[in-house]
Structures are given as structure tokens and as C-alpha cells.
Length: 589
Image 1 (spheres, rainbow, N blue to C red):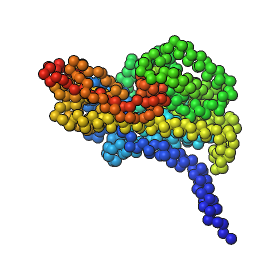
Image 2: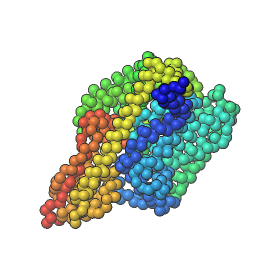
Image 3: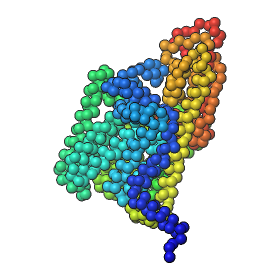
Image 4: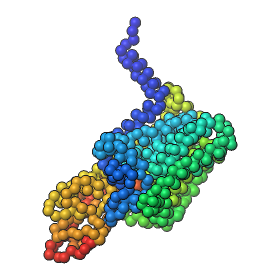
């Protein structure tokens, strides 16, 4: 007697699910694609144009990646002077553009590969330090900073992929006594540093890990300590890059970027307040860990550290120091509440990293703590500004840390296929995955808001161009980011304002996007208001809005990476020169 068709269908479905669970890499790959593919058509915004312009130049002049001029600050400057990132990410985009085309879906599609590599690498690295590697990888993927950053065309996700796999090969090389893997890791460190300079921090991190004793290693203790000498390979490669750029452009671009970060630091507020801002950026960007930390609140040290943070927040808010630079906030009270909530989450992450060292004192605990605390220190006190992309490198380490901490509560491992062994057969296990799902939902909402902001910037640029750039008069425009990229792409009579060199004529128009960088109001003796173009973008959550305190790309926009609240529409002020009989001074607007 054969089983009913419904029972056979159910059985086959369970068998298929079992295969997926036994292949966590396939599950993770599908999760990455599900999270990022909806945003493949995202327009360029933020610093995306800098990388695409460089990539298109590389296509013609591969040996001179920064040998062209760009108007990014209202003046025409050499690209090598404007950019503060090395060129490897643009070389990758140049290859993708040559093979797939220069459309937004093609370029975003090419960057799915680094995102996949970063998450799969996190899973493989986590297997060395926790029995719940799948949770560690999913916790990394579900963070707002990973999802949003992976929908850009910048260098951060590519750098993270190199970073994670360099760590994987280094750890496994020491465990297996494999010089080949260690050399491969050193080369990946060099590639990461040539993608984003921050990755140079991998050199002391991996060297420190080599010196920490570990019983699981097959490599002898003395050989492991001296293996750090292999890290001179990336030092030599980065030094050669510094020498080559100094010979080609007249200055070493690595040292110039370091000088810029130290001398152009925009703290928004000074000292302690800046550290607090980095805490709330950490808690919000790594929301998965902030939510999971709620399950660990029985730790008295964790509660003590968070209480201390609350006291510091109260002192800062009482003196109105924290929000003083942000005078455009529509609801300061709501912003304060969000800062408090996310700062507690951020302090919990740092506290757990320190507690892990105190309890375990093994190589894994030290490795993760140095990774997390080093990234935090750079993001808050050495980078030129606090931003979400500087928090991204610690996401894999925090995901692994949370898996280790939850493992202490004797949670089941995620290696077998049953729901109970997956951590779903008991309330504690369910609450872990509920936290992950909540963070994933927040991450997708944040990514969608950033998508809508980029889309609104492109569409409002198109509105201004269609209405004013098709006449015989010139449409001048200020602002950069996606607004500038699409204005210049549309062509016609649209021209970017160049300080002291623009020569407007009677009847010309000037468009100024308000939610943009490097804008200045014109001389009203010659420019007269003509129209305000308005277009709705995201509604109740924003990544770039001074009104809700959101500064994902730069904290000068707000003390939060993303903020909740009513988000104003994207607006462009349009001016016209009247009357035509007045002489126009040179350099106006």
C-alpha cells in the first residue's frame, strides 16, 4: 500500500530542507542573494560616482588610475588629491563594466561576489571559534551596516571579503602548520590594503594572534611566533604602492590619506561625546548583536558597563553638548532616545568582547577582542569622521562573539538538521532567532530607505534637467553625490558650478539640492528664486537626513547612522538671473 500523495510531498519537502541545513554555505548564499538582489537597480549615490569615474578612466588608462580631474568640492581638482582610497575596487568595477556593461544592475551584480565571499568566509572562520558558525554568519549578514554597505559601489564590502579570508587562511595556516596558507593570507592582506587603507590594521592583528599560545595548533610555538615575519609581504607591497604614487602624482597617497584623517577630523562634538557617538553607531550598525545582547543581561559586568554609559549620556545631554551641532533636528527628544538605546547596545558589544577575554583567555577571545576594539578605536578616534562604513569591518568578529556568548548558555549547535538542534525547539533558541529576524527586518528597511533616497536624488535631478536644461540657457547646479552624477550623465546644458570659474549669463538657472554636500546659497542680488522642486523619498526612516539626525555616510549629517521619524522630501531650489540687464560678476554664483 503506497502512502498518500500529500504525505509523499511532505516527506520530500522535509528531505529537501534537510539537505539545505546540511549545506549551510548554500543557505547563506541564498540568504545573501535574497537580501541584496532587490537593490540591484539602486542608483548611484554618496561616494559611488568617485569609484565609477575612476573605473571608467582605468578602462582607458589602466596604469594611471587617478590621472584625471574631478569637481567634488565645488572646485576642479586632480582625482588623486580628492580620493582617499586606493584603486583596487575601481579596477574591479572596470573589469565588471567591461564585461557586463556600465548599468547599475550590472555593477551591483558584480559586487554580489564580494558580499557572498564575506559571509561564507565568516562562516568558515567561525567554525574555528564556536560550535554555532551558522548563527555567527547569519548574525553578520543581518546587520544594517552589512546590507546597506553592500548595496553601494564603494570599496568596503570588497575589502571585508579580502579581510575575512585573510583571517581564515592565517588561522587555518597556523592550525595546520601550512606555510602556503600563511603566504596566501599575507597576499590577501595586501589586496585588502589596496582596496581600503584601513585593512593595514590586519597586519598587527594577525601578528598578535600568532604570538598567543593555542593548544589546537599543529605549528610549533616558536615557528608560529616567527610566522609574523610573513606579514612583511603586505608591508612591502603597500610600501611599493606608496613609492609608486609618490613618483607618479608627487605625493604618497597612503601617507596623504593618513594625514587627511588626522588633520581634517570632523568630530561634530569633542572628546567624550564623540566616543558616545561611536557607541551608538556601533549599536545601531550591528543591531543583531544589540538585540542578542538582551538575552545576556544577567551578566552583572555587562549591566554595570551599560549603567555607566547611561550616566555619561545623562551628563552630556544635561549640558546639551551632544546635540548642539545639530540645530536642524525636527525632534531632538526622539534622537536622544535613539542615541541612548543604540549606545547601550554598543557598550554591550564592547563589554562582551572584554568579558570573553576575561573568562576564556584563549587565542580566539583575544583575536576577536583586538579585532573589535581596534576597529572601534579607529572609527571613533582616528578616522576623519564617524561613519557606518568604518564600523563594517568588526561585523564578522561581533557575529562570532555573539555565537560564542550564546554557546555559554548551552544552546544546541546548528550542525544537525532538526529544529531542536537548530536552536528552535526551545524558547531560548527561538528568542535567539527572533532577534536575528528582527535585525534582518530592520536591515532591509534601512537598505530600502537608502535605496529610496538614491532613487529620489536621481529622479529630482531628472526633473530639474528636463525642465531647465533643455532651453537655450545653462542650468548650473551645486551638490555632488548621485545628483551630480546623473546631472552630468544627462548632459545638455547642465553644468556643475566651479567656484571662481563659472560664468553665468542672464536667463541662466541654478539648481541646489538641499540634502547634499558642499552647497552654498547664491548671491541674491543676481539670483532670484524661481521654483522649489520636491519629491518624496523614504518616509519614516532615513540614512541621510539632518532633520532626523541620520548620517550613515558621515556624522556631520546626524549623530545616528539611521534615524526614525518623519523624513522630509528631497528638495531642489531653483534660481534664475533677473533682470537680464544687470552685469554678472565673474565667479558667480
